[in-house]
Amino acid sequence: MVVPDNSGNESGENSLAMPVSHQLDPNDGKTANPDVQEPPDCAPTQLEAGFIPASTLLPSTQSHTQSLSRHSTLSATSLLSSFSSEDGEDIKLDRILSMVQDVTTEPCRICWVDKTRTHPHPSFRCVTGLCSGAEWKSFKKDLRFPRGKVCFFCMAPYGPPFNHEQPLPGEQRSPNHCDYPDVLKELAYILYARRPLREQIFARLGVATPSTLEVYKKYIAKRQNGGIFGAYNVIHAYLEVREEEALLQ
Image 1 (spheres, rainbow, N blue to C red):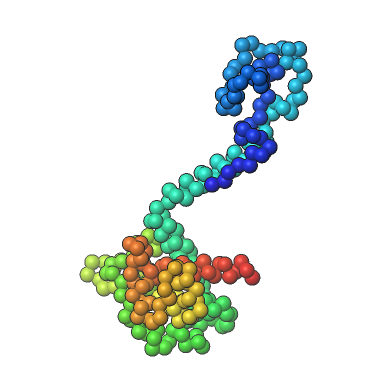
Image 2: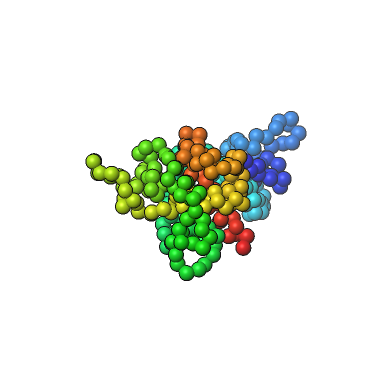
């Protein structure tokens, strides 16, 4: 909370001069209340009031600005505290969807993460071999989310904001229903396989870094604290790390 500096104004209120004929006598033993101004019995004339500089009749600009700043800070704090955890999760998923839509122009998610530019190629043909080895194939086939929540093929959620297409009654699930094939699944694996990134991400999440792929799969396929799945927390944390690195360049 911002506490205004009222060193130039002891009462902390806007300075408004009272007519001279109605100022409180400092010797009458009373204390003036800055929040209450008693109306004068009658309006004084210029002769009665004497000459009063115009600047003393204006409110203190500094005090007024500080008051507005304090009000704005309190309003922002109240607004942030009004967000529920669901609001925060929706924001994360919106951000991930925006990233996925951009990344579809980069066929190799490995090169996108590594920030390297070569001739266009799919992830499984990358010279790094990251998404063509046995560990990747095990990850791709064995990863299991609760039924009806996340697409097995592309790892996009069926709910908003992705709204992944559901198969018709009697129709089997298929990669043909995926708008963004492989993007999230590949990205989730790459962020594990790149150990320095994995450590950065889990340090940001405040969670112990998974030491094995099995531990990692259990984390990302489980809802964290009743919220979104761990996979989306990992990806969102990576986006924050990526943005911070971009700002430092």
